[in-house]
Each structure stands twice: as C-alpha cells, then as structure tokens.
Amino acid sequence: MHKDLIFKKSVYAISELPTEMLPEVVLCGRSNVGKSSFINSFFGKKNLAKVSSDPGKTRSLNFYEIDKSFYVVDLPGFGYAKISQDERKRWGKLIEDYFRAAKSIALVFHFIDSRHEPMQSDLDLYKMISFYQLPYFIILSKADKLNQSQIASAKKTVSNYFPNFNFGTNLFFYSTVKGNWKRAIEKQLYIQLEQAKLNSKVANKPG
Ligand SMILES: Nc1nc2c(ncn2[C@@H]2O[C@H](COP(=O)(O)OP(=O)(O)OP(=O)(O)O)[C@@H](O)[C@H]2O)c(=O)[nH]1
Ligand SMILES: [Mg+2]
Image (cartoon, rainbow, N blue to C red; front, side):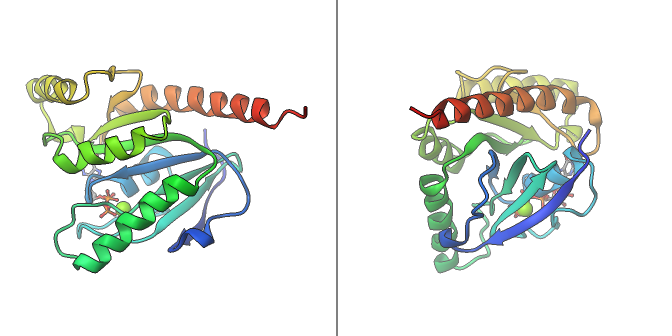
C-alpha cells in the first residue's frame, strides 16, 4: 500500500521544521509505548524508525515522509525517569512549541500501553493538545500482550477516562506482532487525511 517511505529529518528546535508543507500525522505519548515501532510496523518498513528496549530512544521530532503525501512525526516520549530535569523541560517545551507552530497537523495519535491505566501525564497531554481542536486518535498499544478478558477490561478502563472516544472511530488497539488491528486504523487515518486535504483546499482558495 505504501510505496515510498523516507526519513526526512530530525528537528531539535522549532526553527528547523520542514519548509515543505504536507499534512502531518503526529505520534505522541509516554516513552516506551511503541510510537517508533508503530511506524516500522504500520508502514511496513523495518528499521525506518529507531526503536529500543531502552526508554527515551527518540530525542527529537523525527519527520518521515510517506508516499510524498504526508508526514508522520515521531515525538520524544515523556515520563522517562532517567533523563535530567533540564532535558525533560527541553523536550516538553519542544513538543509544546511544535503544537503551537505547526500549521498542517491533520491528526494526532496518542499512544497508551494497553496493559496500563492512562496516567496523569496522559490526561495532561490530552488537555494540552485538545486546545488545538485537532482530530485525535487514542491507540492502545502492545495489545498482543493481552488475552480476551484483559482486552475487555482495557476497553472499559479507557472508556472511563476518555468517555467521548469510540472504538473503531478514534480509539483502537494495535500490535506490531499481530496484524488484526491495523485495518481499522488505516481506514480512519485515510479518511482524516482526505478531510485535511479538503480543508486546506478550502483555506487556500483565492478570494
Ligand atoms: N509485544 C510488543 N512489543 C512492542 C510493541 N510495540 C512496541 N514494542 C516494544 O516496546 C519497546 C519500545 O518501543 P518504541 O517503539 O521504541 O517506543 P517509543 O514509544 O518510541 O519510545 P520512546 O522513543 O522512548 O518515546 C520496544 O522494545 C518494542 O519492541 C507491540 O505492539 N507489541
Ligand atoms: Mg521512539
């Protein structure tokens, strides 16, 4: 399905954002939840994004270009204990500055490890991004680690925290190991990208 996947650039300061405008699909969430793994698995290119068993692997905003038609932006994960206070502040600021500066975010993917309850930092992230009123998906990652009854209880838990989200529309399970959850995300992703294109055509219409 995806033919052309390239790593575009790493951004360490807002002044370095790509100048070429494409719709952006932003991946955010706590460290180690599987954001970078998602890129490799979902877009079917091994080792495109750097993944590690050490949390805190992604330290910049990493832009990947998909089929010359949109960017996937891999953000550094938060909540990683072993980084310095200064570095944590710098990441937090970089992420907030990015949301403020970005002009073409089409969709936000917020990853939460399906084995754990959403944490305060997840709620804080949601609150921060909600301000921008962007299309927003929650991805419950590593679902291969759950059995059927754990899946059911994860569904209940997350619905308590995020009552205005619906499974199959903007709330999904995902696994890099089992492929059965991919299709639903893919479908909604392309709906949102089409919508973003339409919106930008309306916004750029002369007169
Ligand atoms: N079993 C299983 N393991 C996964 C899955 N997704 C990611 N992992 C593992 O989880 C670990 C962290 O994955 P990353 O993709 O590096 O996580 P990240 O969210 O990018 O982490 P940061 O860069 O620190 O923010 C790696 O060891 C992955 O192999 C999944 O769906 N199932
Ligand atoms: Mg990462």
